[in-house]
Image (cartoon, rainbow, N blue to C red; front, top):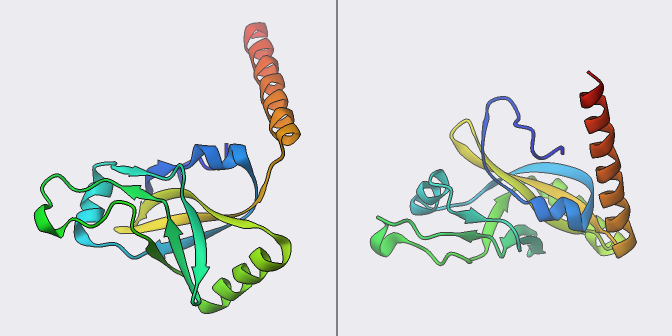
Length: 157
C-alpha cells in the first residue's frame, strides 16, 4: 500500500485507509493546513479522523471538510469546533488546475494522510475517481491472490 509507507523526515499522524478502497487515486499533492495551537496539540496526541473528509474549492481556496480533530483535553476556551472547515495551503495555479480537473472530469479531492514534516502539519491530497462495485471486487480479488502467492512462497522457503 503506497500510503502506508513512511516518507523520510516525516512522522505520520493518520491515514485515510478507506480512500484507497473507495477511489482510484490518480495523482497526489502535498499541502499545508491552517490550524490553531490546540488543534496541533490534539494532533500530536493522535486525535484525528480522516474517514469521512473531503476537500472543496470555494472562492479560490481549498477547504477540507468533515475532518474531525478531537478537542484538546487541556485546551479550555481555546478549543475550536472539531468539524470546522480548515483551509489548505497551496499555490493558486495548483488550485486552479485542480478546480478544472474536478469541474471537467468529475474527480474528487480526498485527504489521504496527515503527517508532520519539519515541525509543520502536512496533508497528502489525492485527486481521485470513484470506484464502482465491480472495481472494488476486482481489487479485493487481486489482493487475495497476492496474499496466497506470498504465503506459498513463504512456505517453500
